[in-house]
Length: 219
Length: 219
DNA sequence: CATGCCCCCATGTGATCACAAATCGTCGCG
DNA sequence: CGCGACGATTTGTGATCACATGGGGGCATG
Image 1 (cartoon, rainbow over the protein chains, first blue to last red):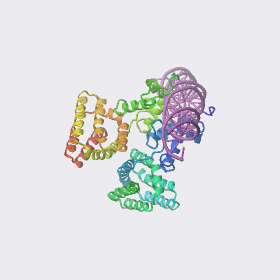
Image 2: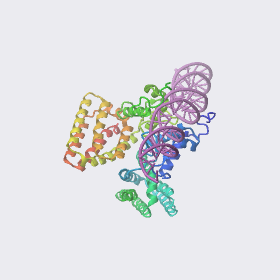
Image 3: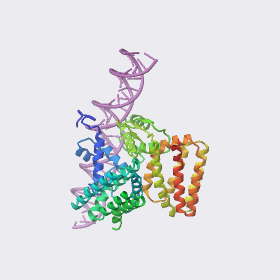
Image 4: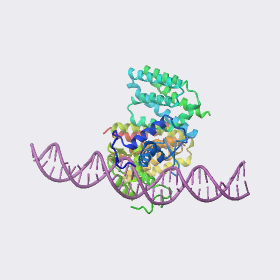
């Protein structure tokens, strides 16, 4: 359709498929899409005004990360997780994130704690506005900001992959329930951080991570 | 080149890109390729007698899993990990695999232990033959067979992703060193399994996993 | 009115091509 | 003899097309 401007022309140093990938990834992680929604390569291509090729690459990359589900015929949908799978992913969070927090602890200075407090107050705002997507986004930003200090990129990447897989589910989950007690857990994390209390931090993170997802299991 | 036989013609129910992906994945995980080796889409296409399209998909999928490294210009190489990255991946194994083993423990009956013993004896054979690839393959089969019993597919997938990332490095590692003591750790795992001793099993798995990779750090 | 079947169209797959950029080797200059 | 610049070629990227397939809507039948 635009053979006159073939590849990286107006690219801000990022390939087209990368742009598509990042946009879709952001949507999925933030819970902007419900579970089980179908996507098509041509539809994605049309939305981003690109051909099927970069759309396909972005989709396959997301599928490789578990952020999208491919049917046997190659059709693409957002994942609709079974309760067992949700529990398993929650267990993975409970395994990875306390470790990341513990590794960040020695490097967590006052400036970081202040930044986390700021993010946490933003969480309160979006909760008040019933902004599910905004809530998920700022909640994850709280965790990511802390874990970045762990200097463990591979471990952080794994945690983010879990978040990505849970994105649509978290939307469905938080839409149905109240989440007023999430702030409490974040405050416990901050307290343990400030006190340099590693066992307390591990427990606080584990509780925060497990709590929200345990709600769905009860359904 | 073959427009007369377009898509899934002689496919044994698997798409071409899937076949390419699986083959490359197997090679990488078994350590058949050294770290830092360059791959090209056209080269892969030629080897498998396919066009660039499925080669590209397979490569990008592997890159998404960390099994291949993409340079900024899109060139593809097998990963050449820094010691820090190796340590981090070892830490991930030490985190994930004891958990998988512990979850498998209640379901581990005599038949499974026998099967593990058989696999373990095959490990001895390939070690005697200085078959690095065969060693890595049967060692991982030992672990996978055990973890399959954990009924935790997402967690197992994460562990396999770590193995995949370590593939080429493990080759370089095991080529340089002797690994006669690996059998000992596997026997400790089997003993703890047979005794139903969860703490002992966790420790044995953790030791087995950490040991081999700790060798390289000493270099 | 419910149900089952069939056909059509939407969709994924793989091949191919044009293009830009990066890489590597070579040649010329200091 | 070493180093830097230039050029050919290799390589990834994105667009487009032909084709097979499977899903869903519509029609006929009970």
